[in-house]
Image (tube, rainbow, N blue to C red; front, side):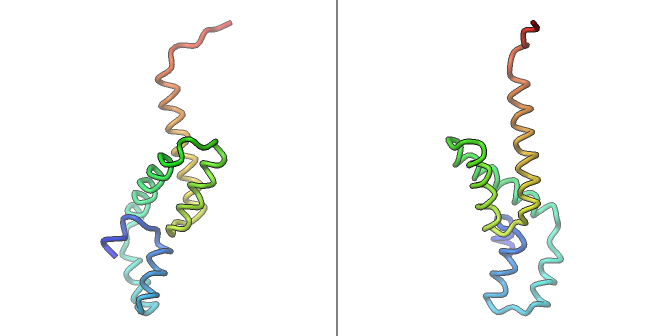
Length: 105
């Protein structure tokens, strides 16, 4: 779990551990020891990779592709959507800071 735990969400890890024959109690115990920051960091890193790969797509298609990809990796859809919103806002704030002053009419 340590190897894949930093790349996947809790749901995917649970699925893989159960498929390998671990009992429900063992899986729950292992996943309860996982710190929420680990999943948050994993989600952010995965989002960065997916976002870069889909740079040429339009906004809505890019967002849907990122959401679908990350949900398949086992991250909760609501958390992915929230992270995408924060990610887009941070990117937009960065780009606005790099523009020159606007002309006032």
